[in-house]
Image (cartoon, rainbow, N blue to C red; front, side, top):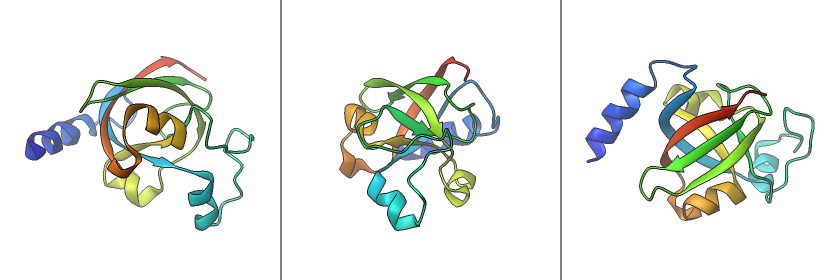
Amino acid sequence: MRILIILILSVCSISAHAENRMTWASYFTVESCKREGTSGIMANGYPLRDDLLVCASWDYPLNSLLRVTNMSNCKSVIVYVGDRGPNWKLYDKGRRLDLGKRPFEKIADLKDGVIVVFIEQLTRG
């Protein structure tokens, strides 16, 4: 099963700017941003808060709305792109989305850390 998911993700990652795609996603928090030394201000100019339905992406315009569905349990959440990320090392390895803490908790357990998601772009920023 794990090999199948990796193959699917490899094929889906070929198009870096697809509007809808399956990919890996993780989460970020105010605390994790402080540990990395960032200011806590998102790319859209607003301060990050753990209760926001926000995500970080390099592939979608800021303020776009995305529906993110966890492929293991079919739970979904709608988030807006408020920041840029994940970091480039993770992006190059296939992780295309960082969810804020609250939206990640809505579709997965935080201890999962990284999940396979399907992203649908609902609006452009």
